[in-house]
Image (cartoon, rainbow, N blue to C red; front, top):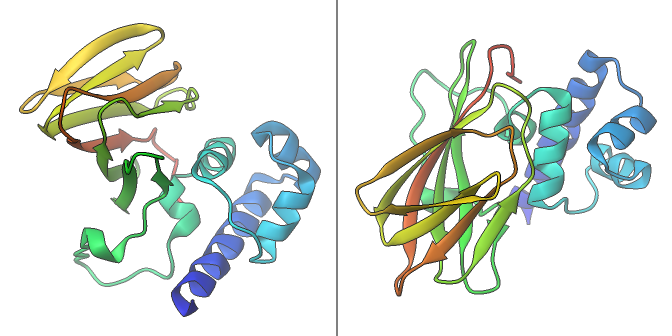
Length: 192
């Protein structure tokens, strides 16, 4: 519970700071990100439990990475993160999950995600801001990557990359779990 409270406090602090830097009122941020003002007020008071899609919309609207909204104070020169230490930001009904492992620093940050997609389960994503590029590397199993309505099969040992400013979906296919590492390359200046 203490970890959850600390995470909500960090999220509240980071959203408020990013909104202030962007010069947006709660009303304007809510309108642009399609999040109710009440939900934003709760979020900035470290109350509630925003879902993954809400975090992505807020990050895109504020021009920051999802992890910039979630991270606490900066750590040392080297960060080592284990999957067990990172709660899933999305879980599917069949056991699929997505964990944001970390975001690199610098002028063009990169988010590193670990995903598990169960057969037949999918995650649809809305288009991201212009300049965002996603790369998926399948380490086990098979997935279908749908970008702007076109399906692409990506199997173990294969990597695909695409401009993520179009609607896209990740779908587990085959008979076993699909494991993949996804990187989200953010445009310069999209830091926390």
